[in-house]
Amino acid sequence: MLDFRVFRPMAPAEVAKGGAAAAGAPLGTLPEWNLNDLYPGMESEAFAADTARADAECKAFADAYRGKLEAMVTGPDAARRLHEAIAQYEVIDDRLGRIISYAGLVYAGDTTDPKRAKFFGDTQERVTAASTELLFFQLELNRLDDAVLDALAQKSPLSHYRPWLEDIRKEKPYQLDDKLEQLFHEKSVTGRSAWNRLFDETISSLRFKVGDEELTLEPTLNKMQDADGAVRKQAAEALAATLKDNLRVFTLITNTLAKDKEIADRWRGFGDVAESRHLSNRVEPEVVDALVSAVREAYPRLSHRYYALKARWFGVDALNHWDRNAPLPKVEQRTIPWADARETVLKAYGGFSPGMADIARRFFDGGWIDAPVRPGKAPGAFAHPTVPSSHPYVLLNYQGRPRDVMTLAHELGHGVHQVLAAPNGALMAPTPLTLAETASVFGEMLTFRALLAGTTDPKARKAMLAAKVEDMINTVVRQIAFYSFEREVHTRRTAGELTADDLGEAWLKVQTESLGPAIRIGAGYETFWAYIPHFVHSPFYVYAYAFGDCLVNSLYGVYEKAADGFAERYLAMLSAGGTKHHTELLAPFGLDARDPAFWQIGLSLIERLIVELEGME
Figure 1 (cartoon, rainbow, N blue to C red):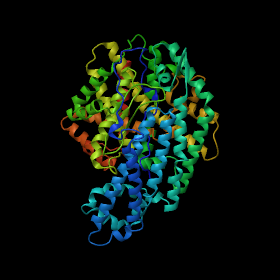
Figure 2 (figure 1 turned 90 degrees about the vertical axis):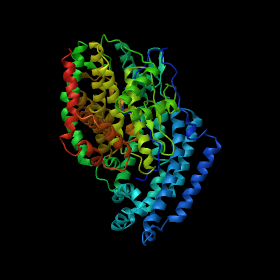
Figure 3 (figure 1 turned 90 degrees about the horizontal axis):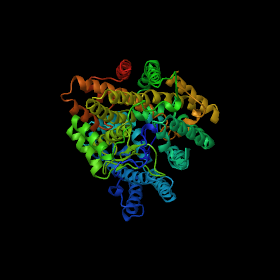
Figure 4 (figure 1 turned 135 degrees about the vertical axis):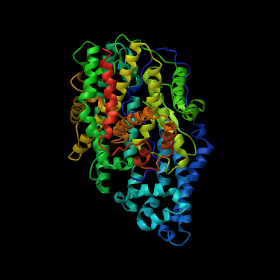
């Protein structure tokens, strides 16, 4: 429950989103990030000094405040004294976050490098040990009388932290006593975090034989979007073969982490396998249930309908599973240089808000982006917020296809959000995952609409619309199917270990339901669950993508009807960070995610695009 800046890359839940460029394609010079804004090196004096300082600060904080909070909240000066304590805690949290963020980003650059892996592991242990001294603080705050704390939180200067205090109170029913919390916290290094690291290092070390090439995961997945169907089939078969050879490891990781979560949930008193995720997302379970029900009911008119249409375009009754993301036949495949991708996204952002484009430009100019594909580099893409005292960093695996431009727009949306939210401070800048995906998906939508508006060729327009529909299906339908898979796995795990066949069976069940009869699922596809990182790093994260996409579709509808003043309200929403509930943030736009009909707004937009594509046959 108490999470001191654990490093979790925010990668797309299905990392096949990017596209492989042809060998030797003129991508231009791809940027690599400069981490010096955090620390100049793993062995730098600055890093060593900060880790030592963090150790000392954590111990000093515990000596100053452990067991003393109840006495602090009495007297006329109580609000000021409690504010002072929280402000000190926030400074330490920021320093710990800077340390672990740097180590995590260094590690993500090459997870197969033993030196980096050791550095990350040692840093994780050091931060965990130091932050153990801080565990008492939130626990003691939550043991204070509700009426007393609520009254103090209305007073200046403590009122600044009122949203954070209200937020941590929501975790009060699920917190354990101090010793148990300490045990959970310290054992995370040899428990959940260790299994996460095993997954990362295993997946990065795998090689997939596609034709005459030995490829890492990212290029292999991207081969499944090649214009040549034979290449797509080779990639799918290579993926299946290598994953099958390693299923024992992935099955053990999945079983262990699911059991670890079940133990934690049982001790804390969570009644549902996804309840802890809903709590951390600050979203009501009934809101998620309404989203899931709406999407599952829409499968026939969205994914089933679109893939039937795509099969007709290919002249077949059903598409093989490796053709699901294939480019449209007889459509020229473009390779987009990095400079053009930059210009495209910045122009789209600037058309919406010059201020938003200015923030995004800082990522390019400041060395905040790492774009090339490299052996050992973490697959997929993410935007890591690091800490408010620094700035975010973006990791991509850019290979020059239009979808790579959309991924760039997506991650820069996260980055802009993180920059805008940073002034709230280390405790209130982080945004729940459901709303964190709003900015990223909105960035994609802006870029897509800008590109579409400038496209007059009918074939190119059709290809763009089809690519957007496929991205929406991957973001909404696929992620809800992933969520359904996780629910089944975690529920069944309570009765005992699952075999690789059990996991494959559950995977095929939800995929068959979501993809529909126009996708022919062949041998080998039952292993594809094994490479999805969110199942390991962030259980039940995936519905946040569907939440964000449907929400953005609704937001964009509001924007199209009333553009005046929308950008200002939108940027104000992002600037709020974690200080407001989703109901407060959406109210200025006349939207309410608690209304079951709300989700139909977003789903209907996808359906309208499919109808438009049907008219182009």
